[in-house]
Amino acid sequence: MTTTKDAPATPNTGTRHLTLAIIALAMGGFGIGTTEFTMMGLLPEVEHGLGIGTPEAGHLISAYALGVVVGAPVLAAVGAKLPRKYLALGLMLFFSLANFSSFLAPDYGTMLVSRFAAGLPHGAFFGVAAVIASSLVAPTKRGWAISMVMAGLTVSNVIGVPFGTWLGQSFGWRLLFLLVGVIGIATMAMLWKFVPFQKPHADASIRRELAALKRLQVWLAVLIGVVGFGGFFATYTYIAHTMTSVAGIPAEWLPLVVALYGVGMVVGNIVGGRIADKSVMGTIYWVLPGVAVALVVYAVAVHWPWSAYVMVFVVGAAGSMLVPALQTRLLDASPGAPSLASSLNHAALNVANALGAFLGGLVIAWGWGYVAPALVGAVLAVLGLGVALLSGAVERRRPLAG
Image 1 (cartoon, rainbow, N blue to C red):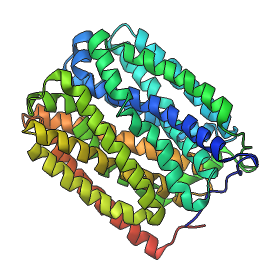
Image 2: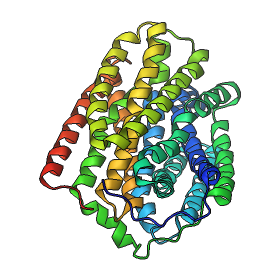
Image 3: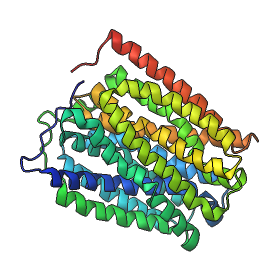
């Protein structure tokens, strides 16, 4: 397995300081996850507040995802020569200001622009955070370190998203963005205090980072994320409507639904990090069929409240198990450009977000009902497995460079 050629952590970085550094990085993921996923649970409130329909509200989610896709490679490459601590701080400042602008946005058009802007630093932040975390531990623990950073994103679905959903339903959906902006500022304080300074790689440059885009395995890993994870978002984007209209769960119980989804994501992320340290591609080969099966069962089980609750947890766990493996795969595929390669994982997941939201909305618009997006997602997971098998076949003929 290849390793990233990062500057080592400062010599006096002990276990306690390492833990606090990873918590600081995870805290940024907590804020990002809160703003990204709470929007899905507040779609009815957003529709009413802005006077728009469900498809238009879905476009706000797609705009954020598009911002991630554009910002991830661009900001990671532009920031290649910056010390990673300073890059993380700058990205979190950008993120906070963009969310404050969403809080103040007066109409749908302005909100659309502000959500796009808020998405720009998302992927680059996770990319640099993953590289920082993996540089602080032994190579055999990279999957664990990355999963701990990603834990902020998954824990947000247990705490931040339910709280944000309750806050938005009770006191106004715009308060979500004020909350996230404050979390972003608090994250900056934690990053400044606990993340060790590391000099950028001596050869760091925009050209060096962009060289990752020439590698076939990088693009195959991105495609696995785009296609394979699309089903997760096709299902999650319309979870509020599915739970209330199909399962018959009262709207006031939606915070519990998204909390269960979040608990599943936490469990899946932790398990995924551990098994990725044993076999990156093996994890991908097993998880994608599991996602497909989970989504098919979900499509049936969602007709009854008790089984809907169970499958919400299962789908959250199954999908999140894939993320640490994909992140590690991209680091392995481009060791000379770790920041950009790592950020591409989140670009891929947000293309999956946009793709899932679009395809889910499409089958709903065709009159197939709110269960249909899960079945579309199962097909996408199977297609993602096909891409993974192709990537493995290519690697057997041309092993990854060290």
